[in-house]
Each structure stands twice: as structure tokens, then as C-alpha cells.
Image (tube, rainbow, N blue to C red; front, top):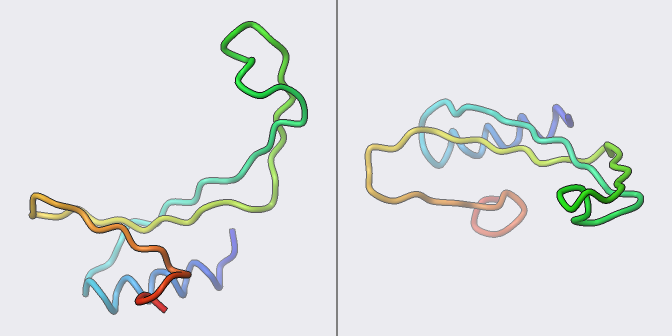
Length: 76
């Protein structure tokens, strides 16, 4: 996980929401062979890659949620 990117995302979250989030990292993967065949008894060859997704979340007391992308305005 890119620590610098994680720190920037957490900092942006703190600025917008004024609270400490839960940080979750999900590593990326690719299928070298097979796509949607593993659940049809076919062959697949997944591999991890050095990219992934960093998500920061917090419980809300409201009836709605907000989803913001760090690399899209107005978050930067």
C-alpha cells in the first residue's frame, strides 16, 4: 500500500468530516487466463498486482451516505 497516498486520503477525510476514519486497503488482481469461468468449473489463473484501492469510512448517524473520489474535485 502506498503510505503517502493513504496519509493524503486520511488527511482529506479529516478535513472534510472532522473525524478519524477506518482505513481499508483492497489489493488489485488480474486474471491471466479465464474470466468469469471459475464459478462455471473452468480454469482461471489470478495474480496479485501492485495496485489496489484505499477506502476510508466512518459510521454515520444519518440516513444517507456520501462517496467521494480523492482524485476528483472537490476533494483535492
